[in-house]
Length: 551
Image (cartoon, rainbow, N blue to C red; front, side, top):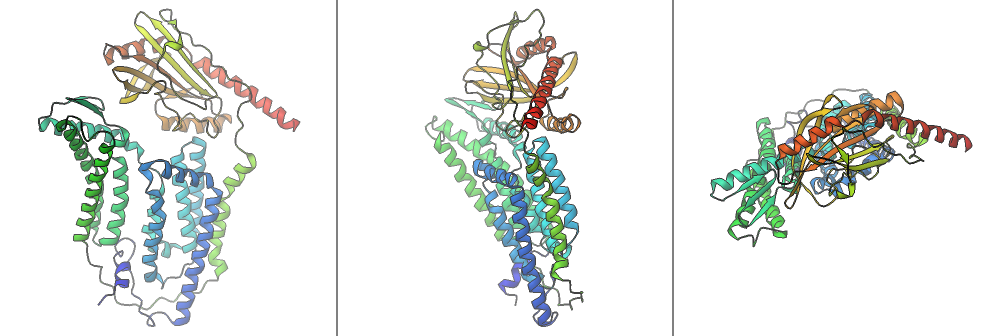
């Protein structure tokens, strides 16, 4: 008969390597068992020390992850990942006592890769890369402290730590579109009169906006983390593990569409008396809770018994390694890990400019005349830019607002690509459409991000793109790479965002696009903007050098 304590480790035999049964007194002598247990305890303390040192060295990165967990409901589950990973490792420990942790120099290479990725993420201002790099360095600590054989035995709990990284927001917009499209399809199939405009769904009596919170990405990420845990604890065969993972991805998406459809239907039937406001959210989470419990119940219903334990085999004779030799890879890995933080602490962050930066007014064709920026009800929001410009131009075609935000060089909290920056400032607007577009700018075809925003009956169209060290892109990820390139070549990274916006009014989106295209084709400001930023940066660096000499 297999006891409960024997079942838990065996259930995981399919993920890493076959679990060897080690009956007491048959494969390891008592001194060897004591030596192995002591080696595990020592490795545990060394790894705990190493993780503490790395966390302290990269505390800003670790703290920024925790901030995201606390601030965003999408990633609240991040607080549970480390305790769950520790629990899964504890379940595996009894079956690994015939393997003594020996340390591995492979951890040094993993730490090096993680540190390089962290530097790249820091210089590019991409917190996501820095967060992933931080967890990669934790993997390096585990590998350096345990050695490959023991790390492989703990592979799933170690890799589970990557769920601490706040990742997945890229799926919000596609899931919003999918939810809106299929909710409308179900509504029409059930005879509800419905009209869709982007992410707005209108039915008799009122309308709904499929906002970011309605995308279902929160439920999707949390359910996937749960699916990974369930497949590890309850299943042995690979096809069942794969099936539960697929279900943990598919069911949340389907459930979110059904949730949205039910809320819309209840609102329609009740003439918007219920399923709106607070109860809208309450009904949604009750529905998600029921679906999650049903998924867990199904998993328990079809759980597999633990794989049979193989017959005991004599443990291979291995030479005893001194604790100092086993700890050497971890010590070297820690030294490598702290090089960059110590170097950054010595050099300090880039200083903010002393003088004020002024963005020059652009040149525009004669058909456009400068108007009053006060007449605009829209503005981009880039709160920590070194300078910004908002102005209006008018012609017979209509009015176009121009917004520019510039950074002479980037530094903490003053970044071109930052979650605080957005294009829907001014009065309250909702984004109802996002697309890619192209238009002529300074005699070159330029890629653009096109936003359609709405407030009540008022709609606007916004086009914007980034300019970094003379190069332009609409892709924020490529803009970050351009910033790294500029910093490596020039020592600083001048960057700007250029946006134009026009009201749609009683016209069509196509007419608004034609108006923006006409204005952008006559706008001349790229070279003048680059020269202004370069001259300003040169003067500031001279001023700061003189100040340093004076000190």
